[in-house]
Length: 246
Ligand code: ARG
Figure 1 (spheres, rainbow, N blue to C red):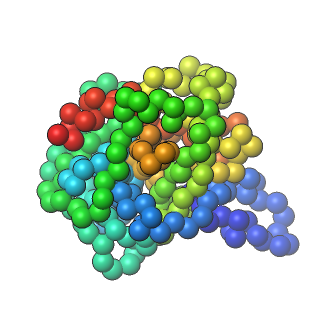
Figure 2 (tube, protein in one colour):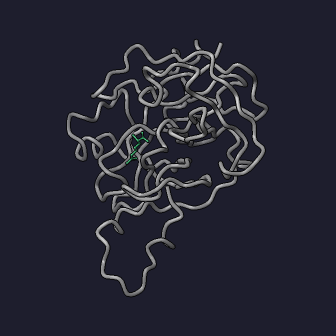
Protein backbone atom coordinates (compact mmCIF):
# COMPACT_ATOMS: atom_id res chain seq x y z
CA UNK A 1 0.00 0.00 0.00
CA UNK A 2 1.21 3.37 -0.42
CA UNK A 3 2.55 6.49 0.48
CA UNK A 4 2.08 7.09 -2.93
CA UNK A 5 1.55 10.24 -4.61
CA UNK A 6 5.14 11.17 -3.89
CA UNK A 7 6.42 8.38 -6.10
CA UNK A 8 4.16 9.52 -8.89
CA UNK A 9 5.38 13.08 -8.82
CA UNK A 10 7.90 12.90 -11.60
CA UNK A 11 7.76 16.22 -13.37
CA UNK A 12 9.04 15.85 -16.90
CA UNK A 13 8.98 12.13 -17.51
CA UNK A 14 6.33 10.90 -19.90
CA UNK A 15 3.32 9.20 -18.45
CA UNK A 16 4.25 5.99 -16.74
CA UNK A 17 1.71 3.25 -17.44
CA UNK A 18 2.15 2.02 -13.89
CA UNK A 19 1.22 5.35 -12.38
CA UNK A 20 -2.54 4.84 -12.42
CA UNK A 21 -2.03 1.81 -10.26
CA UNK A 22 -0.08 3.46 -7.48
CA UNK A 23 -1.95 2.49 -4.36
CA UNK A 24 -2.99 5.53 -2.40
CA UNK A 25 -2.53 5.37 1.33
CA UNK A 26 -0.74 7.01 4.18
CA UNK A 27 1.70 6.27 6.98
CA UNK A 28 0.23 4.47 9.98
CA UNK A 29 1.63 4.18 13.50
CA UNK A 30 1.55 0.67 14.94
CA UNK A 31 0.51 2.21 18.27
CA UNK A 32 -2.84 3.07 16.69
CA UNK A 33 -3.31 -0.41 15.14
CA UNK A 34 -1.41 -2.58 17.64
CA UNK A 35 -3.09 -5.83 16.57
CA UNK A 36 -1.42 -5.61 13.15
CA UNK A 37 1.42 -8.09 12.76
CA UNK A 38 3.88 -8.99 10.02
CA UNK A 39 4.53 -12.60 9.00
CA UNK A 40 8.18 -13.09 8.13
CA UNK A 41 10.53 -15.90 7.31
CA UNK A 42 13.16 -16.72 9.96
CA UNK A 43 15.49 -14.54 7.83
CA UNK A 44 13.20 -11.56 8.31
CA UNK A 45 11.57 -11.43 4.87
CA UNK A 46 8.03 -10.06 5.29
CA UNK A 47 5.65 -12.05 3.11
CA UNK A 48 2.18 -11.42 4.57
CA UNK A 49 0.28 -9.62 7.30
CA UNK A 50 -1.99 -10.83 10.05
CA UNK A 51 -4.07 -9.71 13.02
CA UNK A 52 -3.61 -10.62 16.65
CA UNK A 53 -6.97 -12.06 17.75
CA UNK A 54 -5.82 -13.39 21.15
CA UNK A 55 -2.49 -13.08 22.98
CA UNK A 56 -1.18 -16.17 21.22
CA UNK A 57 -3.36 -16.35 18.07
CA UNK A 58 -3.03 -14.63 14.70
CA UNK A 59 -5.71 -14.55 12.02
CA UNK A 60 -4.28 -14.45 8.51
CA UNK A 61 -5.06 -15.70 5.00
CA UNK A 62 -4.87 -19.41 4.24
CA UNK A 63 -3.02 -18.69 0.98
CA UNK A 64 -0.22 -17.09 3.02
CA UNK A 65 0.59 -20.17 5.08
CA UNK A 66 -0.94 -23.23 3.44
CA UNK A 67 1.62 -26.01 3.24
CA UNK A 68 4.11 -24.00 5.30
CA UNK A 69 5.61 -25.57 8.39
CA UNK A 70 5.27 -23.52 11.61
CA UNK A 71 9.05 -23.25 11.92
CA UNK A 72 9.20 -21.28 8.66
CA UNK A 73 6.99 -18.48 10.01
CA UNK A 74 7.71 -15.76 12.56
CA UNK A 75 5.24 -13.18 13.80
CA UNK A 76 6.50 -9.64 14.37
CA UNK A 77 4.47 -7.29 16.56
CA UNK A 78 4.87 -3.71 17.73
CA UNK A 79 6.93 -2.32 14.84
CA UNK A 80 5.86 0.46 12.51
CA UNK A 81 9.17 0.17 10.63
CA UNK A 82 10.13 -3.47 10.12
CA UNK A 83 13.81 -2.52 9.76
CA UNK A 84 13.85 -0.83 13.17
CA UNK A 85 15.02 -2.46 16.39
CA UNK A 86 12.60 -3.49 19.09
CA UNK A 87 9.16 -4.92 18.73
CA UNK A 88 8.32 -8.44 19.79
CA UNK A 89 8.76 -11.62 17.78
CA UNK A 90 6.94 -14.88 18.41
CA UNK A 91 7.54 -18.33 16.98
CA UNK A 92 4.63 -20.18 15.41
CA UNK A 93 3.82 -23.60 16.89
CA UNK A 94 0.72 -24.52 14.88
CA UNK A 95 -0.83 -23.54 11.54
CA UNK A 96 -4.57 -24.18 11.12
CA UNK A 97 -5.91 -23.64 7.62
CA UNK A 98 -9.68 -23.60 7.15
CA UNK A 99 -10.71 -27.04 5.86
CA UNK A 100 -12.82 -25.42 3.11
CA UNK A 101 -9.91 -23.37 1.77
CA UNK A 102 -9.43 -24.11 -1.86
CA UNK A 103 -6.93 -22.91 -4.37
CA UNK A 104 -7.41 -21.57 -7.06
CA UNK A 105 -10.95 -20.51 -6.06
CA UNK A 106 -9.49 -18.89 -2.92
CA UNK A 107 -12.66 -19.55 -0.95
CA UNK A 108 -12.47 -19.75 2.87
CA UNK A 109 -9.11 -17.96 2.69
CA UNK A 110 -8.49 -17.91 6.42
CA UNK A 111 -5.94 -19.46 8.76
CA UNK A 112 -5.18 -19.18 12.47
CA UNK A 113 -1.61 -19.37 13.75
CA UNK A 114 -0.84 -20.41 17.31
CA UNK A 115 2.18 -18.68 18.83
CA UNK A 116 4.79 -20.19 21.14
CA UNK A 117 4.57 -17.18 23.44
CA UNK A 118 2.02 -14.47 24.19
CA UNK A 119 2.41 -11.07 22.56
CA UNK A 120 1.73 -8.02 24.70
CA UNK A 121 -0.20 -6.03 22.09
CA UNK A 122 -3.95 -5.90 22.59
CA UNK A 123 -5.84 -8.21 20.21
CA UNK A 124 -8.75 -7.16 17.99
CA UNK A 125 -12.20 -8.79 18.10
CA UNK A 126 -13.18 -10.75 15.00
CA UNK A 127 -16.58 -9.93 13.46
CA UNK A 128 -19.29 -12.36 14.50
CA UNK A 129 -23.05 -12.65 14.96
CA UNK A 130 -24.55 -9.17 15.26
CA UNK A 131 -21.84 -7.55 13.14
CA UNK A 132 -23.60 -8.07 9.77
CA UNK A 133 -24.06 -4.29 9.35
CA UNK A 134 -20.30 -3.81 9.12
CA UNK A 135 -20.48 -5.48 5.70
CA UNK A 136 -23.05 -3.06 4.28
CA UNK A 137 -22.00 -1.37 1.03
CA UNK A 138 -20.31 1.94 1.72
CA UNK A 139 -19.11 1.07 5.23
CA UNK A 140 -15.81 2.81 5.82
CA UNK A 141 -12.95 0.41 6.48
CA UNK A 142 -9.22 0.63 7.07
CA UNK A 143 -6.77 -1.81 5.52
CA UNK A 144 -3.21 -2.05 6.83
CA UNK A 145 0.01 -3.59 5.64
CA UNK A 146 3.64 -3.50 4.55
CA UNK A 147 2.85 -4.64 1.02
CA UNK A 148 3.79 -3.13 -2.31
CA UNK A 149 2.98 0.51 -2.87
CA UNK A 150 2.01 -0.02 -6.50
CA UNK A 151 1.07 -2.94 -8.72
CA UNK A 152 4.36 -4.71 -9.43
CA UNK A 153 6.19 -2.25 -7.18
CA UNK A 154 8.22 -2.70 -4.03
CA UNK A 155 7.12 -3.39 -0.50
CA UNK A 156 7.07 -0.78 2.23
CA UNK A 157 9.35 -0.99 5.28
CA UNK A 158 6.83 1.07 7.19
CA UNK A 159 3.22 0.29 7.98
CA UNK A 160 0.72 1.93 5.65
CA UNK A 161 -3.03 2.28 5.87
CA UNK A 162 -5.76 3.11 3.42
CA UNK A 163 -9.43 3.82 3.69
CA UNK A 164 -11.63 1.75 1.37
CA UNK A 165 -15.44 1.55 1.45
CA UNK A 166 -17.13 -1.84 1.32
CA UNK A 167 -18.31 -2.63 -2.22
CA UNK A 168 -21.78 -4.17 -2.69
CA UNK A 169 -21.88 -7.86 -3.57
CA UNK A 170 -23.57 -6.90 -6.84
CA UNK A 171 -20.72 -4.56 -7.81
CA UNK A 172 -18.16 -7.13 -6.78
CA UNK A 173 -19.89 -9.75 -8.93
CA UNK A 174 -19.82 -7.28 -11.82
CA UNK A 175 -16.08 -6.84 -11.31
CA UNK A 176 -15.17 -10.50 -10.92
CA UNK A 177 -18.04 -12.63 -12.24
CA UNK A 178 -18.20 -16.14 -10.82
CA UNK A 179 -14.78 -15.74 -9.17
CA UNK A 180 -16.56 -13.69 -6.53
CA UNK A 181 -18.10 -16.03 -3.93
CA UNK A 182 -20.41 -13.87 -1.83
CA UNK A 183 -20.41 -16.07 1.30
CA UNK A 184 -16.69 -16.29 1.46
CA UNK A 185 -15.57 -12.88 0.20
CA UNK A 186 -16.25 -9.19 0.62
CA UNK A 187 -14.87 -6.50 -1.67
CA UNK A 188 -13.68 -3.03 -0.71
CA UNK A 189 -12.29 -0.28 -2.85
CA UNK A 190 -12.79 3.08 -4.44
CA UNK A 191 -14.80 2.77 -7.71
CA UNK A 192 -12.31 4.87 -9.66
CA UNK A 193 -9.35 2.87 -8.35
CA UNK A 194 -6.16 4.33 -6.93
CA UNK A 195 -6.54 3.00 -3.40
CA UNK A 196 -6.10 -0.66 -2.55
CA UNK A 197 -4.15 -3.32 -0.74
CA UNK A 198 -1.56 -5.13 -2.85
CA UNK A 199 0.99 -7.96 -2.86
CA UNK A 200 2.47 -8.53 0.60
CA UNK A 201 -0.58 -7.14 2.36
CA UNK A 202 -2.30 -10.51 2.17
CA UNK A 203 -3.61 -11.87 5.43
CA UNK A 204 -3.55 -8.41 6.98
CA UNK A 205 -6.45 -6.61 8.64
CA UNK A 206 -9.53 -5.01 7.12
CA UNK A 207 -11.14 -3.19 10.03
CA UNK A 208 -14.56 -1.56 10.46
CA UNK A 209 -16.32 -0.41 13.62
CA UNK A 210 -13.38 -1.57 15.71
CA UNK A 211 -13.78 -5.17 14.52
CA UNK A 212 -11.70 -7.33 12.23
CA UNK A 213 -14.08 -7.88 9.30
CA UNK A 214 -11.69 -9.14 6.65
CA UNK A 215 -8.26 -10.45 5.73
CA UNK A 216 -6.53 -9.28 2.54
CA UNK A 217 -7.06 -12.06 -0.01
CA UNK A 218 -6.83 -11.20 -3.72
CA UNK A 219 -7.63 -8.80 -6.54
CA UNK A 220 -7.02 -8.28 -10.24
CA UNK A 221 -3.85 -6.22 -10.16
CA UNK A 222 -3.95 -3.53 -7.50
CA UNK A 223 -6.01 -0.35 -7.31
CA UNK A 224 -7.35 -0.73 -10.85
CA UNK A 225 -10.58 1.12 -11.61
CA UNK A 226 -13.57 -1.21 -11.25
CA UNK A 227 -11.43 -3.92 -9.60
CA UNK A 228 -11.84 -3.66 -5.84
CA UNK A 229 -9.69 -5.62 -3.42
CA UNK A 230 -11.19 -8.93 -2.31
CA UNK A 231 -11.10 -9.83 1.38
CA UNK A 232 -12.00 -12.96 3.32
CA UNK A 233 -15.48 -12.39 4.80
CA UNK A 234 -14.54 -13.34 8.34
CA UNK A 235 -18.08 -13.22 9.76
CA UNK A 236 -18.87 -16.33 7.71
CA UNK A 237 -16.10 -18.21 9.48
CA UNK A 238 -16.52 -16.72 12.95
CA UNK A 239 -17.58 -19.96 14.67
CA UNK A 240 -14.57 -21.81 13.26
CA UNK A 241 -12.26 -18.94 14.18
CA UNK A 242 -13.65 -18.61 17.72
CA UNK A 243 -13.16 -22.36 18.20
CA UNK A 244 -9.47 -21.89 17.37
CA UNK A 245 -9.09 -18.86 19.61
CA UNK A 246 -10.27 -20.98 22.53
N1 ARG B 1 -2.68 -12.03 -2.88
C1 ARG B 1 -1.97 -10.86 -2.46
C2 ARG B 1 -0.94 -11.22 -1.41
O1 ARG B 1 -0.64 -12.39 -1.28
C3 ARG B 1 -2.88 -9.76 -2.02
C4 ARG B 1 -3.51 -9.13 -3.18
C5 ARG B 1 -4.50 -8.10 -2.81
N2 ARG B 1 -4.85 -7.46 -4.04
C6 ARG B 1 -5.66 -6.42 -4.13
N3 ARG B 1 -5.82 -5.87 -5.29
N4 ARG B 1 -6.25 -5.95 -3.07
O2 ARG B 1 -0.30 -10.38 -0.81
